[in-house]
Length: 40
Image 1 (cartoon, helix red, strand yellow):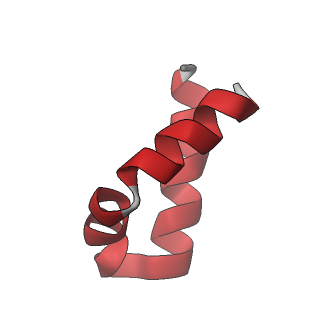
Image 2 (cartoon, helix red, strand yellow):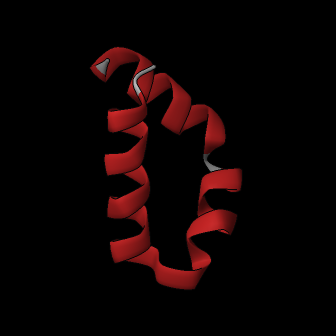
Image 3 (cartoon, one colour):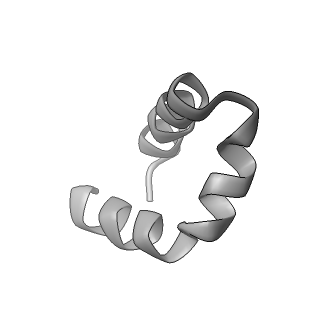
């Protein structure tokens, strides 16, 4: 993965979910990794 892609994903999550971002990422880690794997 590229740091830039992860950074943009984190910024998007922070914008959409705010303080719930970490919990959201943990619950959807597999989906995110799969999606990022496809995008990168």
